[in-house]
Amino acid sequence: MSVFDDISHTTEKASQVGERYVKASHQYFRLKIFQQLTLSLSLVTKVFAVGSLLLAGIVFLSFAAALEIGNSLQSYALGFLIVGGIYVVIALVIYKLRAKFNSYIIKKVGLKFFN
Image (tube, rainbow, N blue to C red; front, side):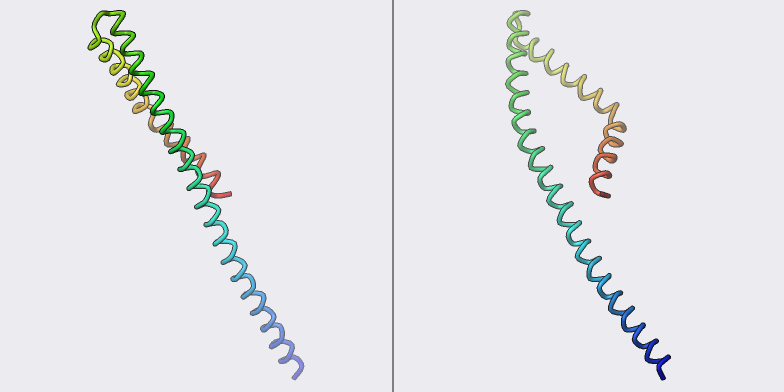
């Protein structure tokens, strides 16, 4: 009967090792999800904080540039039109390069997500 006892003991040990592996894997994935969520949340918070301040700065700089251009051309409407046209051109360039932005973002996020 010792062969059957050895097989039973080995099976029991394998079962315990399997249970420990499943528990450890579950904990690892929970920690990995927590890490990804906190990294994502901190990134969104930083982007929002820096982006909002940058947007305010761009608004004030655009307004000042439009007033200065309008003052030198003696037509404030023309100054604002020129600044608006510059933003339209920048938007068109970004629209044309959107595929490159997508691939860059996927590469950056992929590195963080899969590590």
